[in-house]
Image 1 (cartoon, rainbow, N blue to C red):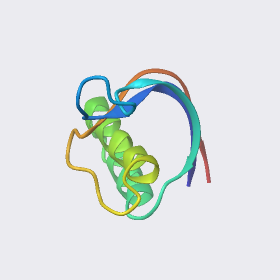
Image 2 (cartoon, rainbow, N blue to C red):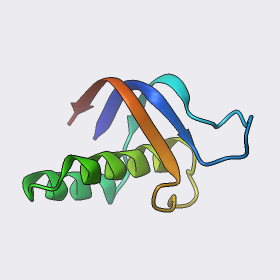
Image 3 (spheres, rainbow, N blue to C red):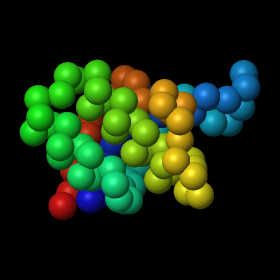
Image 4 (tube, rainbow, N blue to C red):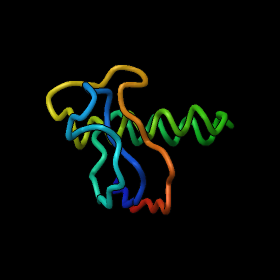
Length: 87
């Protein structure tokens, strides 16, 4: 699954870090198990907040943390301008 988006995106970091949330335009490939988790949550009528948090974790794992899974709430995905999924 590929995701293109423009949003304020970053991860928990010290103040002034280059990884603080900022407006980014990215296209990322989501690795397993995130696509399945997103489908399951969406089709299970998960609340928007849960979908948003799961997507933030998935994008963080692809962009910031290639060698480890981010902790819950470690990434910040805010002010989404647009979001497109490609299968």
